Length: 330
Image 1: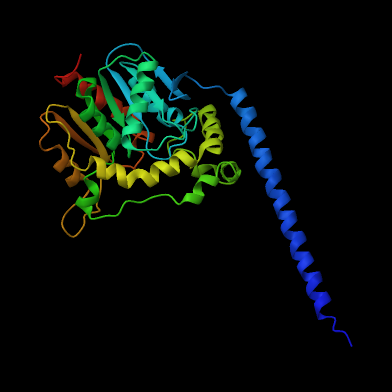
Image 2 (image 1 turned 180 degrees about the vertical axis):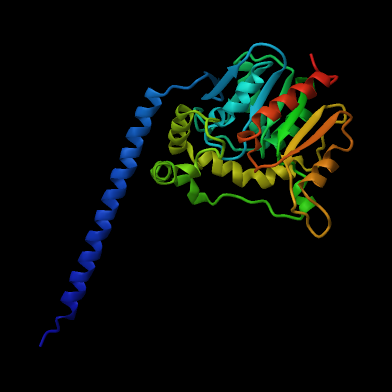
């Protein structure tokens, strides 16, 4: 008289509910455990440099070397641990220069911030950090990738503070029109990767995906350990995702800017066989950007976008030679 189907349906629903509750409990344990481990690691592995206060938050500034030019290294988008990433090149340059790495908010040992990731905010935060750390200019900016945009903006807004720019495969605002490309951005959900513990899991499962691609011995075991650790803290956090999603506006803001003619500029880029149907490549693009700069140099290397992972000795040698020959040298 009474069908058993509703009871079976109820039983099936209960099983699904229990499975979901179990999965939720596991996720809660993972997230909580990741938070506990992260707090422990922060205490056990303090920042290499000094903290300065910028807009009420802590920003990490690392300095090595005491003489020569003051070179400020700026990371590419999403480079979780800039000080560690730049270390081989930093060490080479510091033999003849005072080298500084300012880790932006959301990177390395620096705090997260609620400030918008506009080009103006990024540059003002950098400038404030240098001032708070008592790093005297004028500076040679050494940007990688997207920091090329911030460097160009800095040079225009505060020309007396910048003596030269030496960029590693830098992003420049004119590239979008030159190559007729759209501006990429990270999806919002990426900001959950670090707090959820997925980034930490990735450092265990596929460590090669978060470590520099370099010859054995280029990066120490300690460096690699810290790189994986900070990746677990900071990978694609809310500031990095916001910076990515602000990139289109930052390009629009700086689109009319070019390198000042009297500012010495050198650019390192990759050798390429990728030439589009109009004969355009990364090399022709940079040549176009440098043509009105009185003192400039374009150097190509075999390698990938992170040229400083493999060509750090050559880059350091070329930067030193360029700055020595530059009329802007102190």
